[in-house]
Length: 337
Image (cartoon, rainbow, N blue to C red; front, side, top):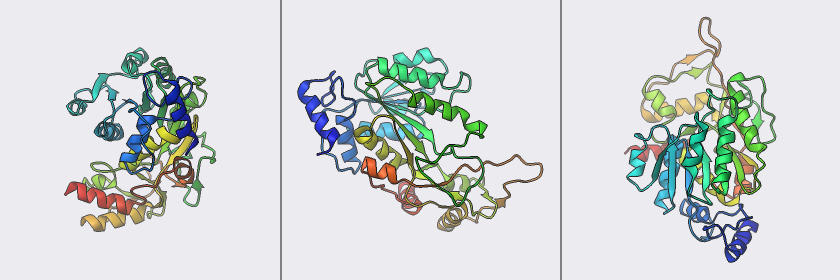
């Protein structure tokens, strides 16, 4: 029996704030997330009642996450500015609330009323506010609402704007501090790292580029928008959206407070190898190429890297459903019919 499972059962016996399996001083084990993780292919036993899930900033990943949690019977709330776009989620019984993170006072009411919830923060840095202010407001609101876990979606593109094709990165790799477009991402991470709310367990997920049905390289290739950089030798990693969902549920269940994980599949490759393989599969011409530097053209950033996902898999006890782009793209083919 894992430590968190034992702690959760002990907390269940001593009582909680209306959430079975999560005592007032024990944020680590998430009863509902364990059941959901099991439903997604994990190996955890059901520990009790469902933990509510709140998704702040419900885009492509958040929508997939909300649907999966709702399908498992969890209470789910999504918060964002485009409530019309989120209306189909409301038809599934998911709560939809208007929240604009650029107006920090709106975040608190968006999270209220679901004590013990997991909050997933899926909002890009808010450029209209001072760096980190929206994240700080979200952390304060989550703590004030009695949330038990706060999961931040961050970026794996924090290691420099130019290719580094031979390097492998992991959680110990230093971030680059000479990449201004990513400075606000780093500011948001610092807010999470320095959060002093001991009752609120925080987890940061640095996501590799996410692909899945309706999103990713194949959509850009079909529109003729994708170009291979240089001769295609630059390293890339990626992660299927459904594996992101599984990682979130596993992090709810197992991640220690202030954990940080790089989230990518098992098989980094080169941009050219992926594009040529997919073009052949889809019956499309090989995408054209362009130089990283072209006279008169904007400088192209390439922040992707070869990502080592060992820590994520070891600490969260997860095996990916789509360990490489080949399995992931085959699943997209099946979904597209």
